[in-house]
Image (tube, rainbow, N blue to C red; front, side, top):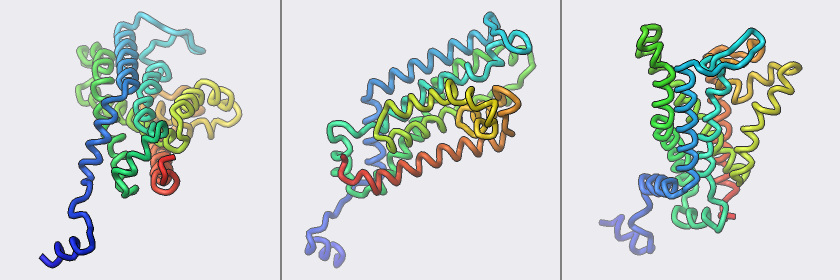
Length: 263
């Protein structure tokens, strides 16, 4: 009674925006973005097609040690992640038409807003990755599963690892987009690193290359592009987790400290 009277006397609001409401609003915004659905469809089709081709083994590539099947070509199998990370990038895009200003007006507590955005990006990454990757992963491993070469537990563990990689890349893209206030820069940069930067540096700075997100992901999945840039599985996961953590932390700091006016 006394607490309520004091709040009324000071004209303080008796209700506040709940964290779950902020989180729900973030999910709602993500569902209305056409680019998110387009990215998911592209990633799904790419992953499913690669899974089917790997299962049938009808397409091979020339390598230094002979022909390489798609199932052994880690870089190609990982390529759908660059369509998938667009989901995180688009979810972070609130820097046009004063959208961030509206969010800040609705949720003045910027720490709560940053936490909700981070959790929404992570949950959306997991929920989207499972249906996007599931069919392709099953198609790819179905022959070995049927022949008894792989167990269901091994296939499930591999699927979990693939989902984790896509989640971490999505978080990297989300954080990168918040920091740069751009949807183009993160996608272009992350896509260019394995295509342009890694090949140039692999021969002279392999220690640096193996710590890049793409190469760390391949090592974590057990398909490094070359022994010279391979990491142990545990180390690779720590490196990839470090990249995601660094970008998420930088994004949260920007949301709390820099983007205070929604500009």
